[in-house]
Image (cartoon, rainbow, N blue to C red):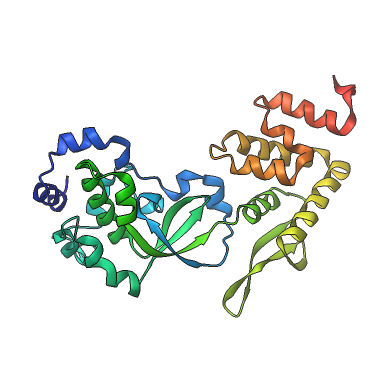
Length: 291
């Protein structure tokens, strides 16, 4: 344990072993990439918005900042009295008492709000605020450990933020577009005058388009349907990849997208066996002659 963290806990009359035992999973962070690897790779976001979020709703941050899931083991990544400027610049935050820290940091939130990515109803730090998140989360946990109810702390530790919500439909359309082999797709948010719009820039082979979400879906699904006739093996590979991702989809976001937007292959969200999935896929196309 770092000396700075140890001193912080001592000042708050915290017994480390009891703290670890009582808080358990509350001490664990989740990396953005770990929460949903597929989304982290193909994410397309909506416009940034202001909001207010409780520290308890922020699950973590990027994996490259995280040496351990346990928040205590990550503390010295941000606070070290004997470290370089990045590690020592915010050490003064450690002097705040838990009941003082929100007021002490209030001005910083006005000057530089914490920036978040939102996936569903979960938040992850994208930039700005890692030091503040760490110290606020530690103080939140200290208060929780001392018996302050969660609902009170959720209100007390709500901070002004700016967040970009991951647009799941656009993200999954981007993912499916990436699976095409013969035809080449490039999908990204449209950028106009250095600002992202609600539309999507799409390059299909050598042609360029500007689509809204529904137009991209229709275009993409039409190309998927064409593959059934022109190259069934590539079509099967694409559906197999989607099926595999559905198996790993612990948050059910992808399954919901498939069931809502591509109902003719929604059966893959319920099948666990690869051979059964391939058989059902052919039955849907050719009938039952493959039985």
